[in-house]
Image (cartoon, rainbow, N blue to C red; front, side):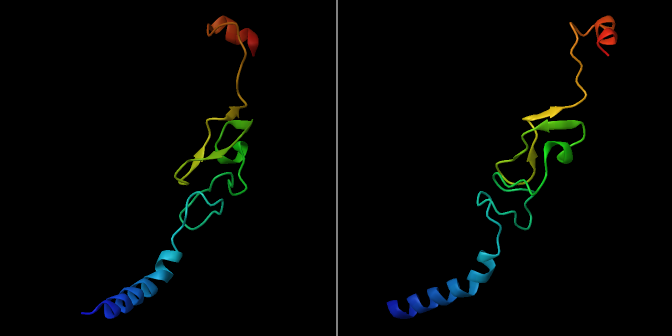
Length: 94
């Protein structure tokens, strides 16, 4: 095969595969696409209080692979500030 036939065949294969490649979700483009829970700062309208039970505030983030939410900066609403974890201190703080 000469070089021009190889080039034409290669181009034909690329053009045939392009629609399938274009449909794949891209993590990191801030667009929530099929198969992604979120993307970068785009958390798909969720907040800490709606993404996981028990959280009332904080900053909800997207996991690096766009598969779910990072709740490490969320703040739980059921915390108790007590002097220690002893039953006596916890009861008095409630």
